Length: 342
Image (cartoon, rainbow, N blue to C red; front, side, top):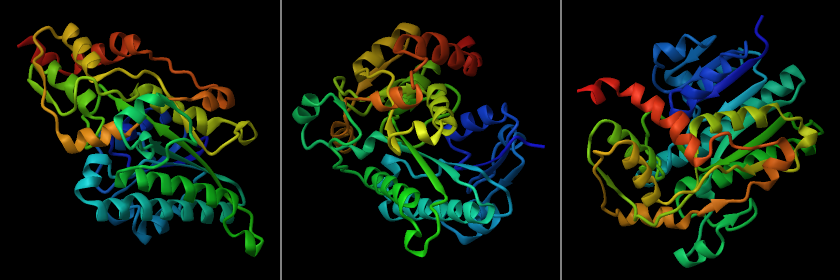
């Protein structure tokens, strides 16, 4: 018998791969969903895989299919990321907002049917923050959860809206009818995530992992932001660990529904220098994409994650130095061993 049933949407993405690997070690039965088929190594770790219409969080087929399982926790990872969302805002809004509403309604139906609270873990983003100028950004280096909430991208707007939707379902939904809120909504505002195992897929913070993967393959990289650009980042294993920590925390410990978490906040020049130190032949230049630069400039330089540290014991395991020396460089050298040997 599985220890629990867990639903993971957007399982085919960067975080989905890492999260399913971690969850598979716990004895949980994983129901994974994605629009496309999952790689065998990921699918084999799951009790069920829903793809096509059943894996589309915007469709009724998704809700109907997921209701077949006694799901207790939902990790809702399905989303269109920042740069891709700017290219197609209508599609991004449909997936990021309507899809999240479907997931929250699914959680409420599961809770009502099984008479238990359903924990919904929602990866939000530092894109919910928005500064009108670079000068203002640098005057407020570490932002709290309640500051600077004027996002300037569709991705940030949608994520902030979904945070509010989740809080509504957790606090007030169906209150007038006398039915209890069955949704225990918990969100993390993630910094840029750097993974050695999967390729980046459309995030505006992807200049960091793109730079690293290009250097490891001996390919030149033209970074699309200025050298002085600064936003917070985190190693993917810490991101997954944070989701699992928040998922396991007692509700009584939590003073809020949405939390910042931080790890390190290098500039793009810092990243280039560090990566060139590990790959001396790396060719990294800077060719600014003004549209993407404006997006990153509107985000915070770093976050204040005091609440997460106090409420559920958050503490990153990977500092900037450890992220490279103990995770990113060993893993990426193994990934590209054939390229590096040639």
